[in-house]
Length: 255
Image (cartoon, rainbow, N blue to C red; front, top):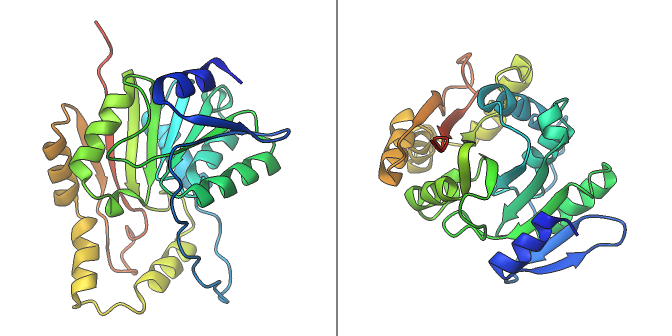
């Protein structure tokens, strides 16, 4: 167990479970796992997580250290970052944070299968009350979860709290700016295909993914330094569709 693992247990009051030959799981309160979606019979699309990870590394240029995948599910972004061709990524510990203990267990299983067991840990928690100490992490990323938080302003305050001075965060949704155009269009059509564009669900989808909404969340959180990247929910034929929308923030370095 590393020094960081001991810190998590001592400061956060978490129970640690060392899996044989693999990663360490931290648990607080058991949560019912999310229902599995029915498997799709449509042709598979390229994995977008490596593209998202590449954008995060390019935009944030994080230093090595403790990197958190918030609302990680089974660790799509976190594991892609751990596998990225980057010296900072190779020297970092990845912490998966999600309210679904079952999804975290799956993420740890995947980490073992990719040879990342010694670098990936998991903590049951949610954005609005992250089970991490103040100023304890160097990077926070979140892809696709912010739209489902109970309180985005509070969640962003928590992200800022846990960042060390000089730390970076990138939160939002999308498939990466270099994701193949044909796959981007097809995926966007699949997602929006059964949605009436005039329905309340469609309007809410677009509203949550608008730059105005992201700026409002950041202002509610009182973030001193942030940038909104992208245009959000767009028509599948729009060349910007699928590139997503992101909130990028930094915590000033100590003087």
